Amino acid sequence: MREIASKQQLRLAFLRWAVVTVPFVLLLGFTSARLAPSGSTNAWYATLAKPPVTPPDWAFPTAWTAIYVMLGLALAMIIHARGSRMRGPAITVFALQLVVNLTWSPVFFGMHQVTVALGIVVAMFVLTLAMTVIFWGIRVMAGLLLVPYLVWLVFAGYLNYQIMTLNPDAETLAPSATATQIIKL
Image 1 (cartoon, rainbow, N blue to C red):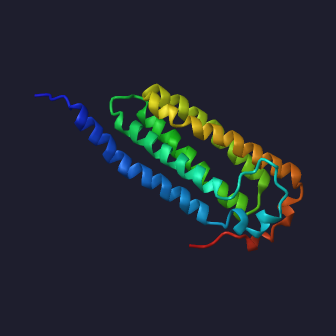
Image 2: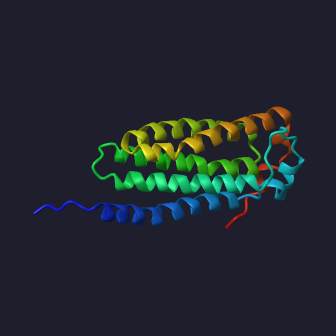
Image 3: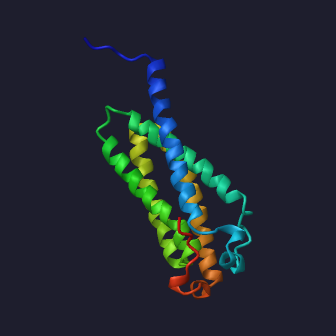
């Protein structure tokens, strides 16, 4: 005997996934951000020349919190899409994108590698664009939830590029490689 789940049951199943995926993505994002001091609490970053459009320090954690919540919700939608053949590849691209995402903050703020960090932003954009297309094909809403992330990555790439251009010696301002600002947990 086959039973079809009601809309209420389907909604509850999605919410069960979201209760796991949203905090999980937030935890990973905040852990990555805590590996090295960022914003004005980072002495190296405070000395850099920044473009005039650089948002205030409070805007970055606010934006990333919203992005990580949307990523977690989109992931929950994809995990919940059991009938899709593309579910496995979508989750794989999501995981790869998230790993690349989590490297940016330690590389930029901790290791002071501005050029490498720009490459990471470009890789994040390419992976997120691919993820958006795949997610969109499975659940349109999941794809739509990734659009603000794509926009933020363009802006973040611009800021990273401008910092690299305005501070050609930024990487040499860093202490030696053995004295990074990465905090050991």
